[in-house]
Length: 160
Picture 1: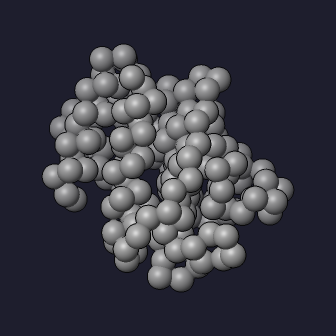
Picture 2: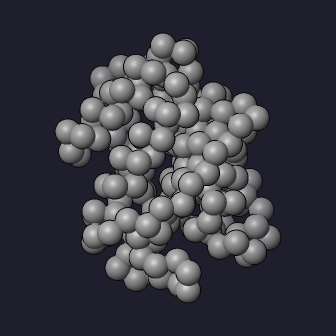
């Protein structure tokens, strides 16, 4: 775990604490990396509810209520699915704010229009969900680290 990620997670924790909000994560390509960064911070029990690691499409449907038809239509790596993952995490937890990640970390898995490094994010709170799609460079580890950092930075912006 890099110092940058721990610093970002610490900032997220302070922001959540200040607003008395609980966080839930819904992760696919990061495999729990966002949750790991969050729980590196002492005291995260006060603002981190839980995390879902939904690597398979079936688990996205079963645990996060992402419609199978949506995955079939847009693909699991899509802003539509990322947004629904965040909303599903909120609906299936006691948290107030959610972040989700779904992507292609590589080295394989690219499909037309979605190269290796494509990652979609979702941030959700109440009736508001924001999504984003980025393409990161580097190997599998680099893509995952950049994804965790961007998810945390996005959370900071989203809850401020």
